[in-house]
Image 1 (cartoon, rainbow, N blue to C red):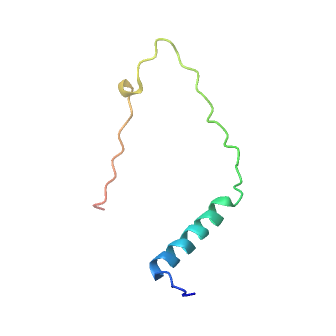
Image 2: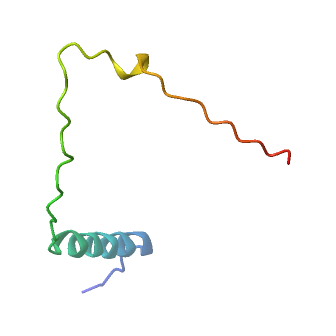
Amino acid sequence: MERTMLDAYVIEEIRRRERRKERDDRPVAELPVPRAPSRPTRRNEEPSQDRDRGVVIIDYSS
């Protein structure tokens, strides 16, 4: 009976798949994420693009 060796690439691919399977089988903790509080909106409120946003000027020359 003659034994043949697998190519190094095939052996490495088998190891890579086994590691990936072990990693995927690990339990994952799922944390509850709180929802952002919703703002009450007015029916006649214009989109926020029309509001005055103000201007900030930073003078680096001094």
